[in-house]
Length: 350
Image (cartoon, rainbow, N blue to C red; front, top):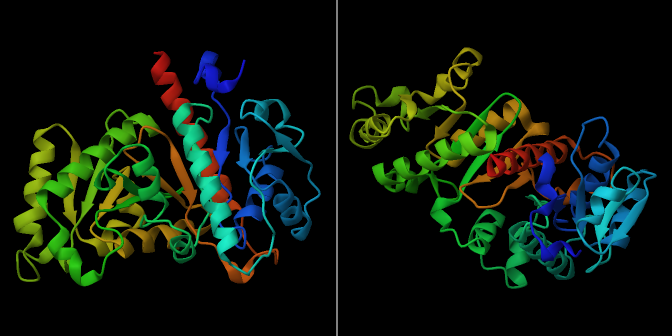
């Protein structure tokens, strides 16, 4: 039976379909880290996954990293489970040149095609999740990519509004969500509204239940200003926007606290008191996660009908194929995607 004839059949009995990994920009560290993750599959107890395209490219990437691993072409995603223990499965299709450290439009087109196909397979159920490799947004824009990033692309492909696709950074010690993401710091106060904070906190609440198995997740919300505004002396956003939103959410039964001064919210004793923290802007969320969990940080998109994760690092063109790139974040992204996919599958069978 072709997998597309009966999407989701591989979830029967607690199993899930293999995960689809997009290549990312082939000039970056994505391809070699896919190979390194497969090499670590037993030690890290990873679920079966396959790369979408790039058969010869991945062979070269493995050699450049001194990884002696078998790589096997597959025609259908379902074949990945059968060969995963013996070889890295690679879906037949697009391929390209492996020129590490030399980004070019041809590589960007390959990255985009791999991303499009991996997302489509997750939507159809032939893959239980998509793990996206790091891309160079400027190069993708040159070949027709119109989205701000992969988060927005996957959301659009799933028919979800961009504002309902919530970025979460997850590591062994911390989970954070930036309320505002890629905008100038000067624009942040004007973008923070009660409606946005309530809307995204509800999405986070549901995702923590669905994908992390937490029936009553504890959510901490950071303040925008120093000392949480100090009763209006250092800003009014806490009094006029953040606190009223928290009151609304608490009235709905969501376990949310704050606004917490951001300079103490991420201290060890404070982290014990919540499951996820919502920060007001990009660096307020990403600085602590990268300080604590740089080599195991995962970017996960919440609010989607599919599971999507990505290692929380970029293409690192400067160290591609030099044996310096750490595979920890890629391994963590695969592991987290598999765990979330399995929880969703179990819930659908309950």
